[in-house]
Image (cartoon, rainbow, N blue to C red; front, side, top):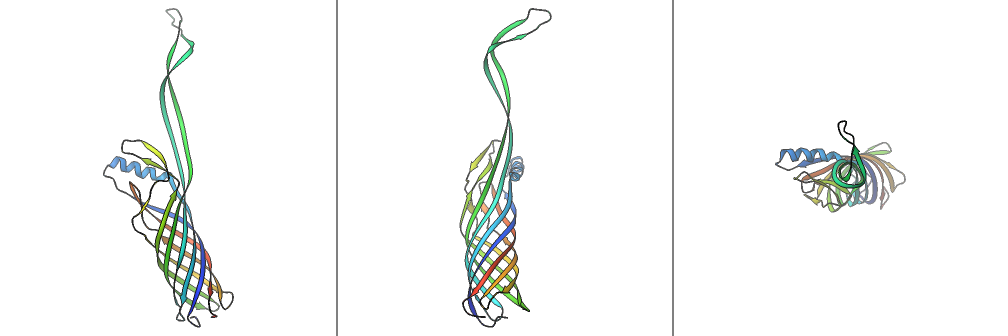
Amino acid sequence: TSNMNAFYLGGNTEVAIVQKTSQFQNSNAAFLEKLIENENTITPRLSLSYQLWIGYQFKSGWSIQSGLQYQEIIEALKYDQRTLTSSVEDHEKARYFINKNADTLFFNGPIAIKKTEDRKVRHRNKHTFFSIPLEIGYQHHIKKVSITGNVGINYIMTHQFKGRVNELYLDGTNEIIDNPLYTLKNRLGYQLSLGIDYPITEQLSTSIKIGYRRSSTLITASNQQSYQMYSIGAGFRFFLSKQ
């Protein structure tokens, strides 16, 4: 346990692998299958987050902290499309056809042209969140270090998306859209972590931790999606009085 009750300031940075969960809502079974297939065009890559804390440590070992959090979720759009186009063009050069039983025929004029076009779209997408976390923690001293655990909620203040998506329509067409609109179904996510805290001085300590985080749900025209993140991070706490 801590020697005394004390306020502290802190900071953390984390990097995480990301998994996305999507739920599609459409009564058209064939279109729903295409939506699920189209989901494979976007792959979550990683998440980066930074937190600033103000907290209160009780000498019983319990703590409570809140602050400000900035988070990025990075995704990759990979879309390949092959299209076949037909057109009629006029050619000035004469073309000829040889008929064994008749004279060679020369003529010029329109000709049907078929072309195949391969389109490759590659783009880096980014979701940005600003939020206010609130966590309850507990630390258990083992010799010089402390084992720490935290659990809490995350209130999303703002969300912004910059990137491109492949939008499907019921008539079978598709369109690459820049910066589509996402809305928040709810503003709450949750998170938990387990770490080791090591004192540097009587007022300063550093920590390493592993964590789990689940985002709030984002809504598009045809999809509801949320993210799960498995992180590793490092941080510090500075106590405003000596421990």
